[in-house]
Image 1 (cartoon, each protein chain N blue to C red):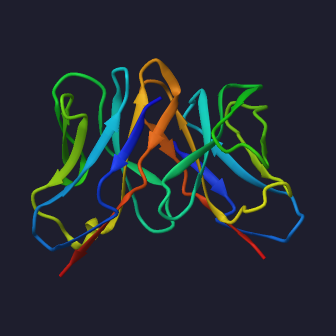
Image 2: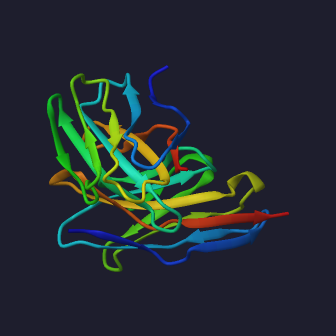
Length: 114
Length: 111
């Protein structure tokens, strides 16, 4: 079964600075990868996804992520963050052969300071 | 607008009570899921259902039960057998191989 590790539980950053949230996965098969964002007391909203094709994936709100198969990583990046990006971010991996086996990381709390 | 609704938003349970959390979707998705979220632990799968009248246990099904009598509805019952039910509960649905769509969540607190 696959698993996900988010390497940072908390990431503080100043407004307009770049940010990278790190995600590593382990799997014996090919994978689908997702990044979700969660604002306080709300559900999860999809930021972006990698199913196949180009390894650089662009999502909503100016976020992008790069799938690196050799390093089994799917790091999330944004070149300039805003106060409104303060939220919890979750990386998730699923097995293309099992549509009910999506695994989530523990989350990274991004705090953008003025 | 299509989406997933969960009710209630906040729920309080006394010791020994069963409570039911509602989840409804109008996205015409076949698969539906229930997750439990605790601080610092991400999401853990409780139950999932691929089609009507069929559901499977996830990683932490003990103390929970579900039903899937309609495609649109997937209620979760937290029974008295669940010893630590205080958590944030999220319902999701999907059409494979795309992402899961999440509801707004229900926060359950044991008094």
